[in-house]
Image 1: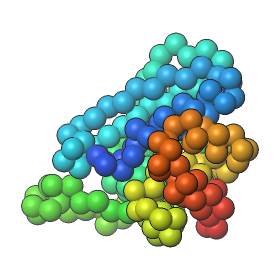
Image 2: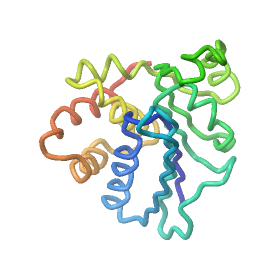
Image 3: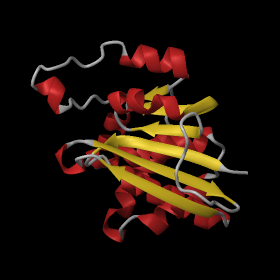
Length: 190
């Protein structure tokens, strides 16, 4: 069985770490894993997309449009931008955070006012206020880990397996705060 996960956000939100945690989950489960990271001006808050494919054997790291079993979005606009990758019946988890791109800040365009409604009605997105959970865990930058926790619970991953994947992926000095964030996401009440 193959699982394809698209992780989307903006530079600095931890999309790459999230992909490494899912890669660690493949190691824990004895699966093959391929990652493909796409950075678009990440240092300036640009879009960052990571394709994560887990299976007994993975031949290509790229997920086709309409082929993602799951989309984990750390920002609403990025969820909208990449929603076309979600397969019918797939799961989409979206952090309610809005990070304004330069075009919105300069007034060239407006932030889509119906983003959440479109995501929930058209794609069945699970919306989560992950930032307050990350802050309560001890670090606002652990939004990614909160989302991974919720994803693990929603897809039936044993907590011990996702925690082990986290241990394989996170630097020791940041492990405890990320464990708290993982637990917060796993236990999130929606």
